[in-house]
Length: 108
Length: 136
Image (cartoon, rainbow over all chains, first blue to last red; front, side, top):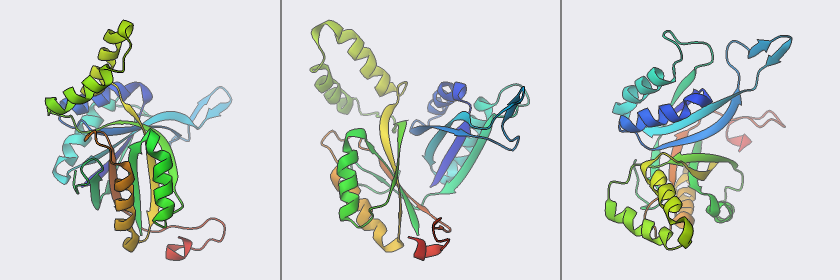
């Protein structure tokens, strides 16, 4: 099992969640976050904005579904034909165990 | 060392905090998050919950309530949940997970949350700079 953490633009939230659901990956957790990337924020006039609001989508997926989930996120969260700065990042971490509280059962 | 990510109902925050103290993991970080679970394909399960919620709705806004419930069922609306990050020693993980499951279980059968256990490479205490298990 893997934990996919995708940091994307806030305006892409609904679209990404909808496309993930259509692709069969319904379960997700959404967190409001702020952050900056490699470009050290945005400079507008003399002011640097380096706490840019973003959305973090967390999903637990099976190992074999990893590439499908990532391709959906990469396709939908991209802005413009070749993408642009600030479109976000996707991080993958291993999950050793998962439990469902309602049933108390192990596994996704 | 392990990181336990527990996503639980908002109104179970107090009970979860108490359970964590009792199971020996007093420290935690919590966030307000929004989420949805696996799409429930069992219509009977949804119908029971829907009926319960509809009985609470007042007569004049039955339609709005129904629309709202449907949007939650379809996943268009996200449920507010509380996300706990807990760092624990390997041998304590089972005890903590069991304690969280015990207090968060309801008789609704759906929507009680998820618990994930992730490995952690290292941790450092900012105050002293010590790392590894000494920083727990």
